[in-house]
Length: 313
View (cartoon, rainbow, N blue to C red):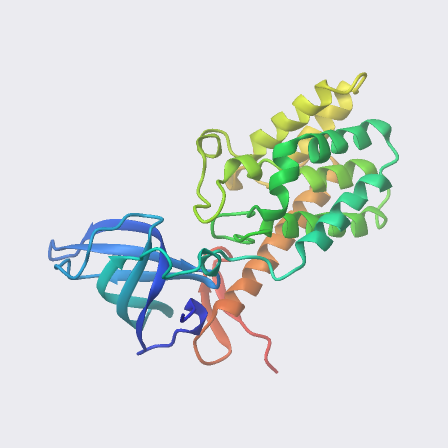
């Protein structure tokens, strides 16, 4: 098969892709057309079906489809003009070719992340992490294979684990650089800051928001998970529970970015900075990796709200 990151302008493509999204829109002339998002393990591609004729067979979102079209560049982004579509038949595709996944070793990352629990000296925090990461079977079963986002950053199999470990390692580094930082609290909150995403997003290949993801969001879900786990630990200090929940509630940093609270402790602020840095640097990395155009400039990145340049010197 031809992977999305291999496609080039002007190329004719006949192949199977996952239809990630399907919209029926109208052109300026009032003619209906389909706007699609096609996915394989290397990324997403915009697809347009301008002529809804008999060559466009019935299909829905999250179907595997066989398409025939031509690649073009629109607004500096690759797009495919599709002439024919039909649903893919069983055996014509390997589902694993359509699930993006981390390039890193998930077992090694998981071992490193869980190893941080043994570095926590506070008995209550240690028990809290064991309760959530080991005793909660939904967490232990899904952490290795969950994504950290739909599209913005780490939106692939194992992305949540990769992002969580990276943020935890950054926080571990920062914890010894400043006075007044409680390392146990900071490491705990780094490990837990996005844990609610296991319940916010569905599994691949769908990777869409669940009802709780839409109604509550991962920040509130994560804070509730801390409350429920702390309730199972005899004598867990209420003040400590509030401090940990605050870090989770404040880790997006600003109200405009969906943060219910602003960071009001040194640990909460360090966590916000670590999370923000890892997410944005990863977004730049992914933009560079996905770029198929010539030259040093990748183009405008929506998350970063700026043009991105490759550091080619």
